[in-house]
Image (tube, rainbow, N blue to C red; front, side, top):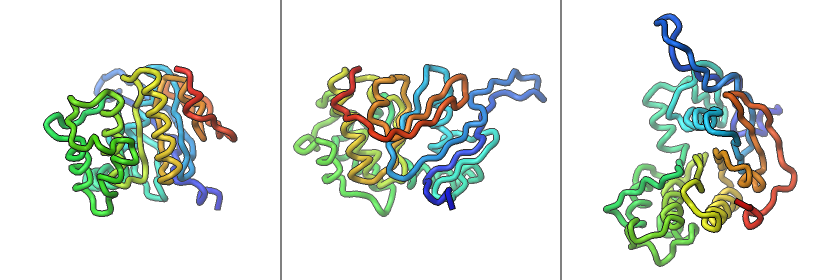
Amino acid sequence: MENENYEIIVENLSKIYGNKKKNEAEIVALKDASFKIKKGELVVILGPSGAGKSTLLNILGGMDRATRGTFLLNNKDVTKMNEKELAEYRRYDVGFVFQFYNLMPSLSAYENVYLASSLVDKHFDPHEILSLCGLAGREKNFPAQLSGGEQQRVAIARALVKNPTLLLCDEPTGALDSKTGAQIMELLYRVCKEQNKTVIIVTHNKAISIIADRIIRVSDGEIVSNEEIANPKQASEIEF
């Protein structure tokens, strides 16, 4: 069947805040979003601030619930999960990378990553993941002793060490200079291809989208296009 080729299937996903029955104004943050994503794709969800990108990412990450619609990950309906199942989904299936690194300041780079690995059984080796992320020799450094780019690498290592199905990244280069941002995008691309992970990056920065296998454009809470890219460019070609 056609859907067997896709790891993620989203159909008519909507998120509405407020309740007319309680005389609350309704705000439509996401309206009837539908798309499919293949395993191992690097996907960029692109749109301006307030377009609904983060709402969509929060639903994909199990941090928020859709008002209606379905979201399947490997044929598991995430939208029908109860709170316990959602907690397990976030723990085992999803790795998160945010604009701000949210590292534990009193823990070393290794300890930050090790702590995440301790949450799951089938994790990667923290030392190997730190090395993959370009942090060999920096494992004992605390966040305050690392540059912004290095801290983001630790954050990526922390997300990846759990061996998640999805790596969800919300403006991962937003707090970085252009050179460091390009290096982080190169790392995310390598993680996607070498580890065969599905990586979804939410951003308003159109420049980042040139390395994507798929670009999903969002505007005013709606998917306006879903384009599969035949020949993505290299991260070194990004011009921030």
